[in-house]
Length: 105
Image 1 (tube, rainbow, N blue to C red):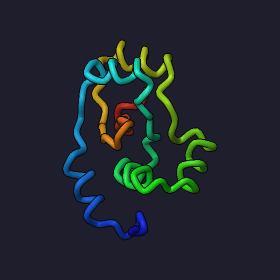
Image 2: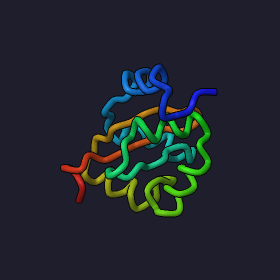
Image 3: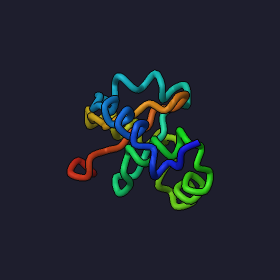
Image 4: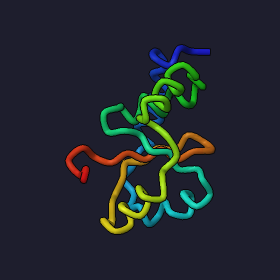
């Protein structure tokens, strides 16, 4: 298996499939518990690639630092009230979401 740092093909694929979506389109997935927030200080593509590679060390460190995790009810409510659009990347079975730095409350 390729090292996530060198998996150029997967990085290109993830990048090409990353899109901005309104939070309203993601709420059903949130209700199913499959939406993961990614801190704006992390690279969304890098996180997606490392999750796809099951990089347990990086994932555990980010979870411990509160940089990735399941979207909380309060986050979901704030995004609903703000009619937020988020960057999204799908890494089955998860949808990763990231708020733009310039859009942070």
